[in-house]
Length: 214
Image (tube, rainbow, N blue to C red; front, side):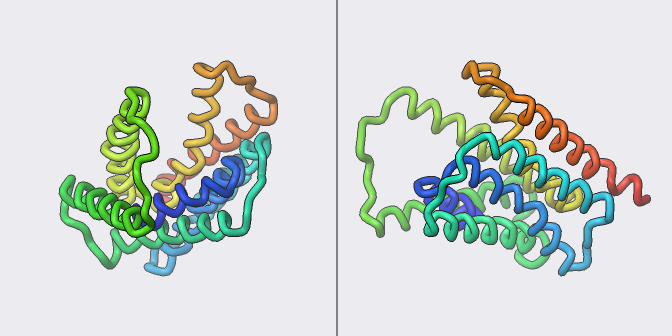
């Protein structure tokens, strides 16, 4: 999940625009739900509607940006999504992790170690001074991105439907746009507002789908 999913996404970002990356990542809930179905947990009709609506909303939101890409970047993104989704399913169905925080911690440590080894084999090294801003960004990603967000995702994956757990792929662009408006002085277009409404509606559908089926 982390070596292939996160690592290949970082590689892809050198060749693919952020808009196209968002669209590719928005495919993740559909792939994850399909893989979950192979293990006997097919999404309900209302969940499929929510998944498709979220994908459409993510495409609409990303269409405000650039869709430039090189073929190698697209291949990296495809590999990243498959690694992330297959790893997500296997961690719940076949390759059970240690219980609680130990399972999440060991996964992040091994994934990080794998990427360090790959970078050393490629001959990569630090190319500039380590600034306070860089350290602050790194600390934020460690705390918010790994300790909180990744742990929350893995916990949800073990407790709720895969479609709902993977809906973060739709919510992330909404949060990014909101932060850009609040702190970056960016303009919120009508198309972006419509896309955000569609995405939030899809998450509501995914959240209530299992209760409705019961």
